[in-house]
Image 1 (cartoon, rainbow, N blue to C red):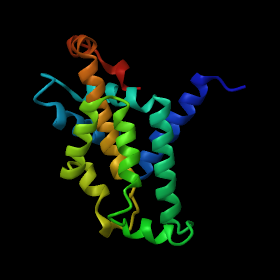
Image 2: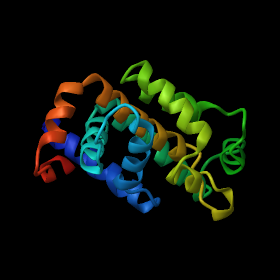
Image 3: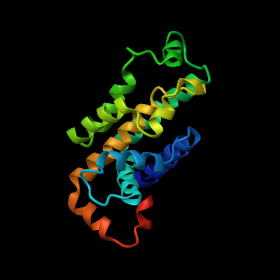
Image 4: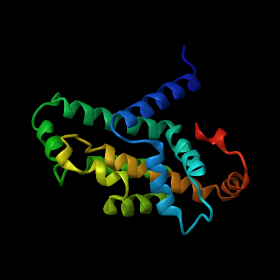
Length: 180
C-alpha cells in the first residue's frame, strides 16, 4: 500500500511537471504572490513565496483541483472531449464558470484573504496569467489560468495566517531548503 507521503510526492511531482509542460514555473507564481503581498509582507522574497506556494501544492484538496483542471485542459487541447464540452473549452465560453468555481474553492482553503486575492488577480491577469489567458497561442488553459491565480492567492492566505513563521523564514540567511 502506498503511504500518504508517497502519494503526496507523486501528486506534487505530477503537478510540477504539468505546470512546466504548460509554461508555468514556480517562480512565475512567486512573482504573482510578491505582487499581491508587497504592501503586507515587508521583505517578502521569491524563496519564501515559493515556500508558501509549496504549502498550497502539498494540500491534497488543492492537488486534486489542480490535477483535474490541468487534465481537462490537456484533453480539450487534444480534442478528446465530447460535444458540447469540447466547444465550450475551445472557446473558453464566458458563462462556463466551472473553472472559476474550482479556483475559488481552492483559494477558499486559505480563507477570505485568498478568495479576495484570487478575484483581484483573476481580473488583472497579472504576470504569467496574461500569457495563459492569451487565446492566440492555440493552447487551451481554461482551468490553468484560474488555478495558477488560485495557487498564488492560496499562498497569500498561507502567508497571512502564518505571520510569525513567515518572519522567521525571512530572517533566515540560507533559505534554499524552502524550495520543495
